[in-house]
Image (tube, rainbow, N blue to C red; front, side, top):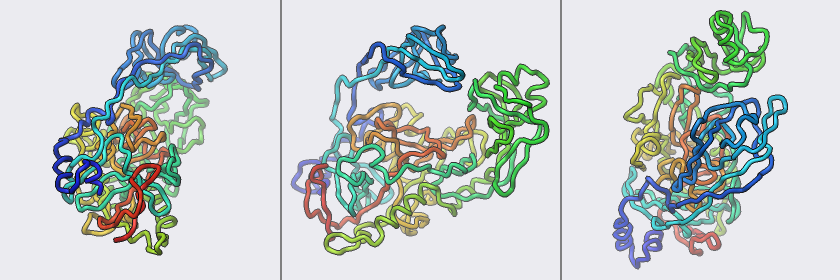
Amino acid sequence: CMLVSDSLSDDVETAKVNIKSKGEPNLNDTAPSYTYVEKVEKSVTNPVTIDNKKIYVGTEYTFNQTTGQFTVITNAGNVILSDDYLNYYTCGSTISTCDTIYKILETSIEGTTYKITLADRYTYQIASTIRSEVGLYETEDDYGTSYIYRGDVKNNNVYFAGYYWKIIRTNGDGSIRLIYNGETSNATGNQTSINNTAYQYNTRFPDPTYVGYMYGEDFEVQTSSEATYNDINALKKYYFADNYTFDEETKTFKLSGNIIESGKTYSEMNSLGDNGFKKYPYSCQGTTKDSTCQFILKINSYVNETRVKAQYIAYSSTSLEATRKDTTSSNIKTQLDNWYQTNIIGKTDSQGNLVTNYIVDGTFCNDRSFASTNTGNGFSLVPNTLYAGYKRLYSDESKTATLKCVNNNDKFSKTASRGNAKLTYPVALITADEVALAGGKHDMKNQDYYLRTNAYYLTMSPSYFYSSHAFALVFRVYPAGELHPWANVTNSFGARAVINLRSDILISQGDGTIENPYILTLA
């Protein structure tokens, strides 16, 4: 039914031929694709407040009509906001490229709070939209030919088990993959997720282990090789010491021995010479003497006010094999399992059939394979670990996506015939590759494709372990539809449940639109 409806054919085989003739989707652009023009609001009051940090400013800017983004240029740099920078442009933060910039007209300072009190605000608006890539596209997955929806699709809405869903694709075995879309047909924003949650608990340790949907923890206290550490607030005052302790019970670190008398910025510590980092090399990145932390920095040398050469002293994984034992569920897997148990198990349809009879096992790919350019080992904090999805969907000039999963250990499934048999329930998350094939792209807004929700939500695709910040990262989708590789696993974003329906179910009513979604029944 999906195939015939998409190609306006009267039989399935003709529909397949028509879909195949579309060729490969253009992943270097969004679907639909857009061009943008600038939009200016004059004399906006109090648009930006900055606490205890610098901002990036410049005397000129450029505007990209393809992405709708501004880039601040010319004599630009990170500065403390003041009237010295009137008529300069800024994103209002330390980044130089953004969707909205401000021409600074007035400022104010109250303690460590800096405000742009008057500015001209530059944003974007759509100039034109090209909707040529819409409907089903053919690609291969681990089980055969899959047909995935792309672009501004209007007929992929399903009402099932008391919730609204979007069809992502048919799998190669004929089953149908759905993504949760809320309790009402017109849900947007956070209402399209089962909840907002972190991929991992906020108390987890910094380690590549935690890009895993499940993982193993064979950890010990280790000192890394040297890296450039960048996650420093230039204006923030931290504490430093000549020693540290590790609490075996809580697995946290704390400064000990001789501790500096009052907090200092990294620049202030550097200015102390031998009484600075040489005397007090350890930092918990805390703003009080008794702060606890999940790793200690051993500072070897100063680079600038936001960078140092340092080693991590961390409770971290001992081997790649240990990280991939998959004995512990990620936080987001636990949240999805709990939701499924509460809201799906035991529920019946209008004919008294268990809704679980509609759902089949599937493969959910947590692709932890390495990029060909990777230099990391997948378990150490230094150097960076670069995952394959980051390269094919973000860093490669020509973007590619795949629905095939390289390693069986990354094929999360309920049964061994589908993968690693590690799932408690047949539910997980969408992959970044599925988002890309549907029309999402990094750093490019997409106003209209069916996966845009006006809220952040997570994928289960690893991206990067970033040594300079000690961040484990996965892909997420932005409110404006961008596919983005920089979601720290400890930050909270939306969780949208993904399930697979059996191939022989019937449509009892509906045409797949939001107003009249498909209603299903067992054959």
